[in-house]
Structure formats: C-alpha cells, structure tokens
Length: 343
Image (cartoon, rainbow, N blue to C red; front, side):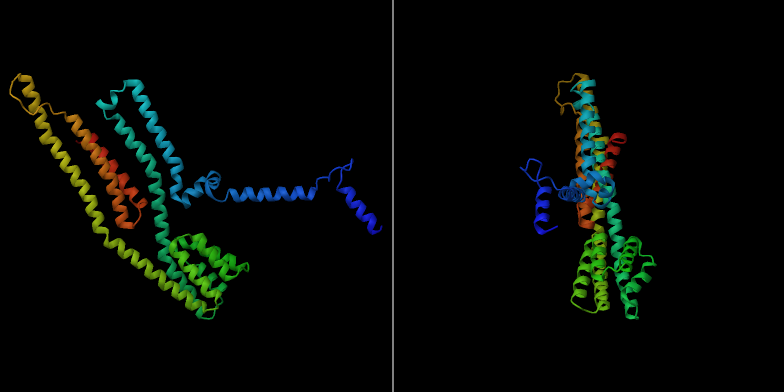
C-alpha cells in the first residue's frame, strides 16, 4: 500500500458516508470524558463542593465550616418556635412571658456550640503539634549528625511518640521510603500538618535544602525557631490569664449585683407600690414597679454581657475571637440559668 492509499484511507475514515463532515473520533471523545472527570474531581477537592462531599472531614479541618449547618438549624428553630408561640398564644406571649427569650438562647447555643467544640479540638491539636515540632526537628538533626541518612533518620524517629504529629511523621517516612525527594516530602508534610508554625519551619527547611545547605544545621535552626515561637506563645497566654480572670469575674459580679438589686430593692419597691395602690391613698408614690419587665431587661443585659465578655476573654487569652466562643456559650448558659431559676 502506497502513501496515496494510506492518505485516502485516512480521509475516508474521517468523513461520513455522504462526504460532508468528518466522523467523530472515539479517542477524542474518550479524552474529553477523561478531562471532564478530572475537572469534576478537582471541583470537589476545594470550596463548597468539597464540603458537600466530605462534610465531617472538612468541619474537622476547618471548624468555621460547621456554620453552614448550625446557623440554618438555629434560624429554623427560632422561626419555628416564634411561629408556634404566636399561633398558640397570640402576639401578647412575646411581651408577657420569657418563652421567646428561651427559644433565642437555645438557638444561639445551637449556632455557636458546635463551632466552639470543633475550634477547641483544633486548638488542642495545633498546641500538641507546636509542642512536638522542635523535638522532631532536633531528633532528626541529631541522628543525621551521627552518620545516618535522612530517610533512615526519619524512619527511626517515626517509631517514637510525638503526640498529634506522629501520624504525619509516619506518612513522611513512608513517602521518603518510596523515593520521594526530601524537599518535596517535607513540603507535603508541612501542608498536611497545616499549622502556621509548621508551614514557616518547613518553608525554611525546604529553601535551605534546595540551596545546598547543611540539612542538619537547617533542622537545628528550625527546631530553635519553633521552640522560641512556642515559648513566646505560652508566655503570652500565661501573661494574659489574669485579664481573662478579670473579665469572667466581672460577669459574675454583674450577675450578683443584679440578683441583689432584684431580690431586695426592686421587690420591696414593687410591694410598696402595690400596697399604696390597694389602700387607695391619694399620696403619690413612685408608681407601679413592673418587676417582670425589669428582670427581663436585666436578663437581656446579662446575656449580652456574657456573650461579648466571652469573646473578649478569647481575644485576650488566645488572640482569636473564635477561641472566645466556648467562654461565651458557658456565660450565656449561666446567665439564662440564673434568671430562670434564681432571680
């Protein structure tokens, strides 16, 4: 078969029977299908689509994403409770009882408690990793100085216990045993650990190793930097502890003052006003004291102070607003409990 025959056969395969248009290429269709699947896979690896596919995993890694679930549930609870009370008792129930306040408090707790729990878990994980990271770098540097290769040193270190860092070290050991270069493996390690300190240390090690520096010295420098960072963070937290205690104590003092004011002064004034009104005396007193209204206003004030005092305690103690949600939830619950059962 000559070149002309081959060329004619190629043209015939790419034309329809009527000779008007080329026939679809099965290989091109298969290629487009593969690229479509890859694009679809990448779409579900980040953003909201990843949350839809792996909600629990994403919530554990990024606690703020739990708001996609907790906030709508809390909103539905509040709207449903409000509608149910109005339909059952009328609009006056909003002003004559504290039922709507109770529904609001529980809706608020449903919205923030899951985020507070997940953030606390993530904070403990990060703290454990940051405490173990200097020891890991120092141990690897010491074994490398003794003559071991990096893969062998990391393999020996992976058999130890480094808290939350241990599974990441064992994964690093597995990758290096498969022949992955140290720089690439350590970058994957930093991305998997996903803490600011780990990313900074790994970036330092990767750049220095790529430039041809002594890996042991780089690891030792990274260990020293991580150790100083963790110590400064711990000192800051310990130094701000007294201010956190002041914020919490001021909230309890506020509750105590309101309790004393409501149970003594306001109660006495309300009873005196009722007595004067019942006696029919023409002497002007201070008017009727609505004890329920005052207690409800005080309850709202205590809830607001408890919530924002908790956020302030988190900012002072850990430098993050989300860290204060656990204090805010506890203070709001204490305020609600105090006014419903004691004041």
